[in-house]
Structure formats: structure tokens, C-alpha cells
Length: 144
Image (cartoon, rainbow, N blue to C red; front, side, top):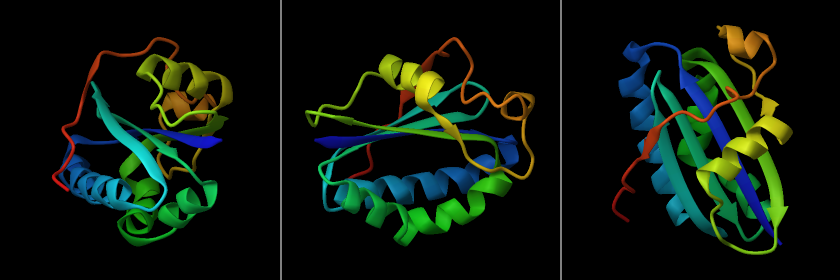
């Protein structure tokens, strides 16, 4: 079985976006090179929202990635930079990255909130994402 991990983050101010993007590029580069990763993508939406999805052949390797390197550094800054943060995780039989629509559906039904210091009204309401998926675009993958 493969582990799918989805994150949804909303950067609380455009002024945090350059620093956030720097960490996002570093963590995506780390993810693409991590042992056990089967796929990784990032998606941007209006209002400073960023989604990530990764598929892992081994949950232990996913947890090793999550707690090390660029990702660990970015996680320490997340609660200050973001006013919405949520994660969803599930098991699936194949290494295929799920469609963004499926990631959104799973976030709504199975997602959990992450702690932020300056929560938005959506976060305060205990909601992991808006009911309707927003239009967005995929970030080009950094060179390997």
C-alpha cells in the first residue's frame, strides 16, 4: 500500500509569500529526492493558498522526510506565516498521484487542522478547506 499525504496552506499575507516560496521550493526539492517518494506536486490557488500532494511507498520514509531537512525548518515557520493549515492522509493500492479534486474531497472529509498562531475565520470554524475547490495552477517542478 502507498501513503498519500495532502497539505493545504494559506499564507496570511502577501508579504510572507517570498519567504514561503523559498521554503516551498526547498521542501519540494527535498521531497523529489527523498527515499520512498513515488510522486509530488504543488498547486497554487487565489488568496495565497498552496496545496501539496505526495505519494510514498513507505510511511516510515514519509515520516523521515517530514521530520528532517528543509521540511523540518519550514514546519517551524508555518504557524507564523500561515493562517490556515490542514493535512489529509490515506492509504491506496497504487503509486498514482490522486487528482486535485480527490485531494480536495479527502481534505473536506478526512482532513485535520494544523496549529497556526493567527487563524482565519475558516480555520476558527474548524474547516480544513472551502466547500468549493478554487481555480489554480500547478507549480513547475524544480530541476533535479
